[in-house]
Length: 467
Image (cartoon, rainbow, N blue to C red; front, side):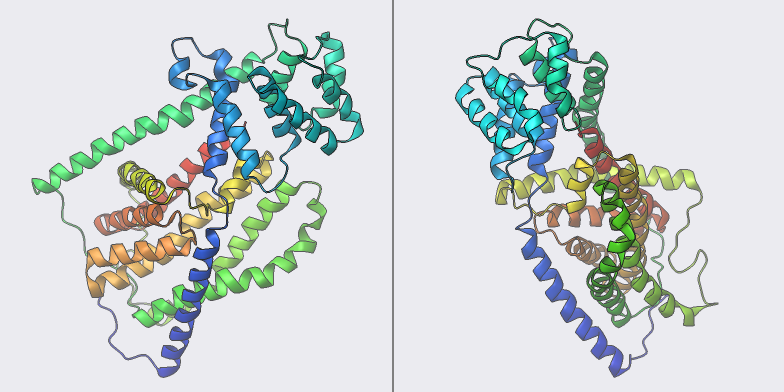
C-alpha cells in the first residue's frame, strides 16, 4: 500500500527532529565508547586453546596437528599470558594457577614461580599449602592420591577441568588416569563442533551463494512479491525508531527500570550469574515496551484497512518454506559476514567493542542464567528487532527510495543500533541478508527465524567454548 501523502503537523515534525538529534548523539557516543570495551575475540581464542588442551589426550595422533595444532601447550601458554596482560585485574585464581602449571611444564619455570607468588598473595590461607608445594624447585615433590586430594580440596569450587588435570599431572606424575576420559571425550566433541562444523557451513554457504549467482545470471530467480508494510511516513518511522526505540527504550527505560530492579533482584546476590541473566531479560522486555506501544498507536487509525496477512506480513505458514528460507539465507550470509569481520580485523586490527552479552554467556555456568540469556538473544531480540527494522523501516524506505535502498539503509540503521564500531560492518552485512530475505520472501516470519538461528548459532558456540 502506498504511504500517506498527508503533511504531518508541525508538533510531530519538531518531535521527530528532536528525537533524531538525540538518537544521533546517543549513537555517536555509544559507538565511540565501544572502542573502550574489550573484544570477546581474545577470550574466545583462549577458550578454544583450553578446549584443545583438554581434548588432546582423546585425539588420535594423526588428528592432533589438525585439531590441536603443532604445539598446543605453547599456544595455550601464550594465549593465557596475553589474556592476563590485557585483562583489567590480576586474573582469576584458576587462570593464574593454570598458567603457572603450563609455564613450569614448558621453558618458563621462573615466570611460573612469579605467578605462584602472585597467586599466594591473592588466595586465602587454606589454599597456601598447595601453592607452597608447587613453588618447590625445580619440580614439586610427587605425592600420593590421598595427599593430592587433601591439597586440592579447598580449590575445587574454583578449578576448571583443565586446571584439575594439570594439577594432577604436576602432583602425581606417575598416574596414568589424571584426565577424566568422559570430560576429554566431551571436550573433543565440543572442539569438533566449534571448529569443523562452522568450516563445513561456510563451504555450504559459498556453494549456495554461487548457485544464487548462477540463477540470477540465467534469469531463473523468481520475481519478488510486492513490498507490503504499514503506510507510515518517514516522520512516523523516525518517531518509532529514534524516539521510541532509542530515546525512550535504550536510554530512558534502563535509567528508570534498573534502580527498581535492584531490590527485586537483591535476594539473588549469592548467585550473580542468575541475577545478571534476569536483569538482562527484564531490561530488554522493558526496552521493547515504548516502541511497541508507539507502533500500536500508529496502526490503530488503520484498523480495518489491513491487507491480507496484516501490515507486518508475518506469514509463518507454510512453516516448511519459512524454515527452508531462513536456513538457506543464513548459510549464504555466513561467509559474507565472516569476510566482513576478517576485513575489519585486517584493516583496523582488533577495535574491541563486543556486545557485553557475549562475555556474560561465555562466563556463565548457571543453567537458569543461560536460559535467561538465551530467551533474550534467540526469542525476544529477533521478534522485536525484525518488527522494527524489516517489518516497518524497510517497507517505509523501500516504497519511497526503491527496494535496494530500503534494504541497505535499514541494514545500516540495524548495525548502528547495536552500538559497536568494531562490529558495524558485519552487522550491516547481516542486516542486508535479513532485508534481502524479507524482500524476496514477502514475509517477516522467515526473517525472525533466521535472526533467531543466527543468534542461536553464536550462543551455542559460546556455551560449547565454556571450559
